[in-house]
Image (tube, rainbow, N blue to C red):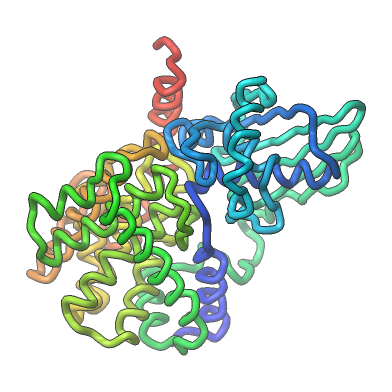
Length: 428
């Protein structure tokens, strides 16, 4: 029986995580930092500097910044934030950029208004935005999550500095993902009063479905979603892959529709949502059953990512698709053992997919991850599971999730650095 405190904690996790974002969250975080720095300065800056960790560089290099007329890059995101961004809107900071701002953004890009530098020896998610106007300056630093401002400085004076995170051995606070586990996630999904999270989940379905439909209607990237439907048919397995891929097609290519994210990622938000929605429609389950399945999908993904870290060389589509797989098994009447087998089967298959930044090919990785998720589900429903000692599979679902967390956070550190060096054209 779950305690009231655990239930409240899980609700807070969902409220913290399932938020709207316009565009890929890494360039949006840069735009947010730049817009906030401008607001602190109190005037239009005459020049700016943006410092980013390697993982931020990786996830901004190949993705279109929304509401810029198709521009790509760190400097484009930062300048858009300064020219027309609204820092009060956080991950929707560029909603306020107008088409008439595009020329100004391009003009400043050509004038080298913004200088960019690579920060080393910092957290994987780290941004600092510095703006200058004559003798005045302002600086904003973001760390660990996309809107987590840790320092604000104006004219050399520190206006705000967040204290270091609490030590691991301190008592867990509400919203703490370390309290997540598969047994409790399933019980929570079965018993929570849906009125507590209905609006969150309804908005997730609405927003993420809308961008998927846009991706299927028009040509974005290489049209992975449309291609799947063209060549693989129109059964539920193909639709589950195609809808998720199409949402990413549109999002990675600058579509100006917002998504509801998961673990700080719009692609992961899309992937935990759309395959579950497609299976729920196919099975003709109730809205209540769909909502409870989405709780499982979201929390299973967050559980894995909390151990891996928000930015890693481990592709987040895999953890998100694993969440979807768990929810699909739940929709088919699966219980704890069935769902556990599904999670193990999926992670045993595609945990080697690497993240080489946000870009159109993310849609293909999502399709591959969802395909593996469906296979993991089907194997589980036949009572089949990969066994302890087979590679990184351990004895039980929690131990396997822990080993995946170790792989993503620790094991792929060198891979991550090498990917960043390759993307920055550094010699071996």
